[in-house]
Image 1 (cartoon, rainbow, N blue to C red):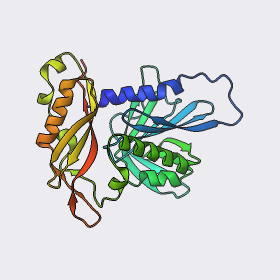
Image 2: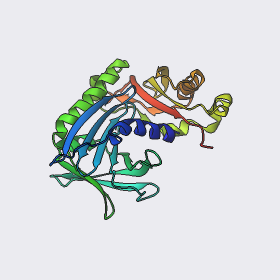
Image 3: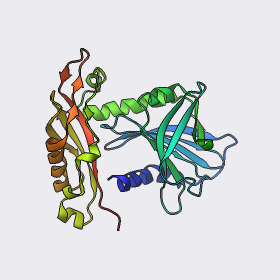
Length: 277
């Protein structure tokens, strides 16, 4: 439900960087890390200036335990693969390989293709922080590579940004980290919603949006409280979001250090997008 919103976020994130003119190319590529404190997510961006401007970003979205990786190679002017790919990420110098699922998205009709990789394993950020470079491939085909010096400091800044956002939303990241198990949805979050949940008048007017909510998951795995932190832009969509979560969500409850069920507060994002015409 959030493909259109994700494309727009990618465009806003990369457009300023990719549209910048390079007046004079340095003898050696210049590179930099930037941290972006967004309204509902934190993002880490690395850009490398050489013959062309390449960019890599990591995004952390509270409510999604897995980060997202985006890689932009401006030299890639044609879509190399369609559909979903099994993407391998190889870390230097360890040689360790982690896997995620990826696909190519274009920022606009004339812009470069962006490789988006998600469903990354929990240890991804730790391995990224220990590396000096990464390479991406699918099967025997190389998809891209980039040096990532000072990755440890960059990942630390990303995590600090994410923790600050959680605290601002009333969630204690230290208490979350101390849990033996986070709440786990039974099934998938997307399965809780159906097309019939989209308010008819809102859908007819083509209104889309994403609601970021704070929910309390009880020891029985049910949601006892839901508060909108960042509105979808439509009050009715916000209300339907919380209603569906309270009525239908069933989770495995969080466990404390001793393995006992405990009530916890967490963040969840729900995207609403009308089908393209």
